[in-house]
Structures are given as structure tokens and as C-alpha cells.
Length: 270
Image (cartoon, rainbow, N blue to C red; front, side, top):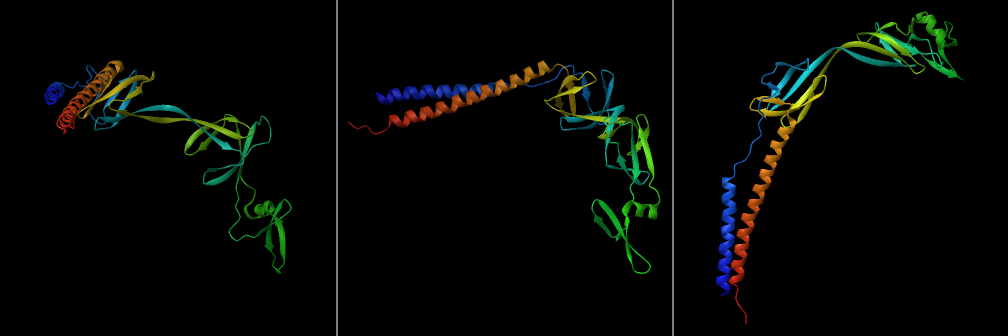
């Protein structure tokens, strides 16, 4: 009687396992697609426009792309900190700003470097150059005086707000002067690159419109209907969860049938 009941349960579990397995085989996996895309990126060098802003496809491969746009007159800025140095016309200048709360100007003074091997000594707060006389005597000359003797007066330039200044091959304007730094500003082209990956979103255009990307062969489709795309991805994820559940039912049913079979045929002690 015990083995007969076990046989019934084994049959039930095998039927359940077979049913779950058959459902796995018949299930059709949903796919993600984009209908009526806003943009289709199909080749490198392709140009397209979003709300008046023109983009160039700088790279395209494997369902991903990079798109770039150039702002022709972007604003750049830089600081020349007080006591820092800056190169101009192959000459090094030191930036000197008066110790005032609202300085009106700054001075660039040529940096005059002592030649290699020049001996210096420091006495108190003053630095001196050791000069060998014709008779073998040595004398100490203040370093600033020595430099004037060797190089002449250092070249100086005055900077005021609104002045033009050549900086790193850019024609800049002195925007502001503070006790800490001289603020420079200039206009120049600026290229911004955005990465587009399949399944991810990207903001494009002057209004930062959101698009979702979808790789399709050698193309990348851009759609502004992000909600519909996400719903399709959720459907695919839900499908995989259900398939995993059916596999679990099928495997557990087989294991249960095997366990019942083993228990039913164990030797009976009585």
C-alpha cells in the first residue's frame, strides 16, 4: 500500500515537472524594439540635429556611439595667482599684485635668473652674490643690484581690468583683479562629446532632451519615448523571472519524485 501511494505521488510530480518543462519550451521571449526612432545613427561622420543643435557621429560600433557638438564661442577662464610665474614671448614673468583689498592693477616683472655656478650667501633677510675681485678679494653684492649690473632693469608690464593679454596661445581679456589673482577670460571653440550606449539614456540638445539608445545591428536608434522602452525591458525581465521559476518547478518536482521513490523502497523494520 505504501509503495502504491508513493507511485501515485511520483507520477504526479513527474507530470508537474513535464508540464513546467513543456511551458519553458513553448514560451516565446519578448523582444525590445524601437518603432519610429527620432534619430537613426548609421555611420561615422553622420550629422543630425536636435532642437537646432548639430551633432556629429564621431564613432559607431557594436551598438554604441559617441556624438559630439561644438560651441564656437565658449567662455574659458584662468587665474594668474599672486607671486606665480607666467610665460610670455619666451620670457618668464612674475605676477605681482599690491596688497590692497581692491587693487586696480597688477604688475608682471621679468624673472632674471642667476647663471649656474653663481655663489650666494644670506645675511639676515638679505641675499648677496659673492663677487671675486681682480686682486683676489671677495665682496658681497645685493642680489637685486647684481642682477641689474648683469642684465639691466627687468622688463615690467602693467595689467588693468579690460586689458588684452596673450595667454597659452589665446587672446584673453583681464576680467578682474583681486588681491589673490588676476582673472583672465576668453572665447574659443569647445567640443562636447556624449557617449551613447544601447539600453542607456543620453541628454541631447540645448534643452537636455532625454533619449534612450537601442543597438540594432550596426546602427544605434535614439527614441524620446523612454517610458515605452523601459516597459519593454521590464517585460523581458519578467519573462526571464517566470522561465527561471518554471525551471525551478521542473527540477524540484523531479527531485521530489526521486526522494519519494527512495523512501518508499527503504527496508521496513517492524
